[in-house]
Image 1 (cartoon, rainbow, N blue to C red):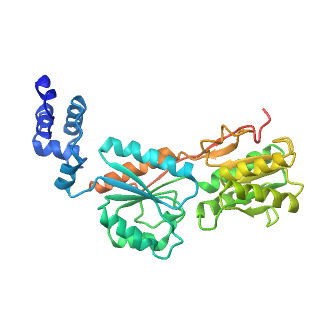
Image 2 (tube, one colour):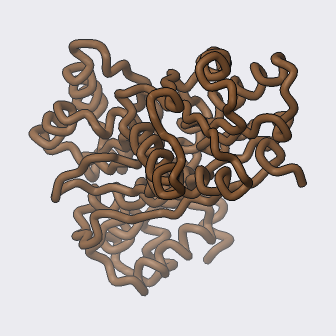
Image 3 (tube, one colour):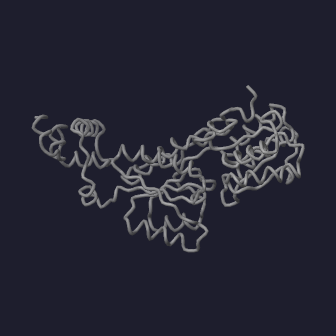
Length: 342
């Protein structure tokens, strides 16, 4: 039987026969319907894998009135972060026969909400993944809910009872890496924050302030600066910090790009790292371990978070009842040469 099927185009009917189920059950299983017994779903998926079967996307769209497309809308200058989200989305989408799309938008534009809704309607998008700062835009979230668009959020800072989301404790992670600097003997530590529109950066600042206060150290305007997440702003911030807080022996930046800008400025200033000034970042970007000196940083599991969020979104799209609306992930502190001399 298998040799006969391999000589022609495999259809859902063939998969149903191989799995020993009805055509309707095979179709439901391939479309990830929740209304299929687990043993029958496994039989269908096993048969599909055996014959390397992939449902025709056009046929699936017509049969189910879905696009099988999930889009990540983002407004974030951190391309590494966005890339990790897309990787996680792809992992989940490939398992379920969906397509992952990344679309940039500018939330500073007056009509960006209207443009987002037009996009979702025009392309019949099945659901959205939103990350900071879009996931914290109250007006956008209200509009999406009003139009019945299914959404899962990544790292939102404010949520409602009907939101589905994944997150890490930004404040706790920032506290831990600040505490690490303090345990190394640093007392004069500066913090370089990010854009005010990114509430995650504000929570990282809260973590820094909480750690400094707990250890009886100064955390004032003199020790806190603001950047825009770019390497250039990190470079500029270092110059400003050295003017106003020349006694600083450590700087914690709210993302890796700014931390790298701080390091380059410090090296240009003739400083030895970490002997004269230690530097820590946040994100564990792809270059943080290749940079010289390699960067101590907070590593949130972004790919895993995006994978989980996309799987959750597909379950919602399929009509499955989901009890746990939120899922917490744990960040890791990656210790490297920018803070540790070993």
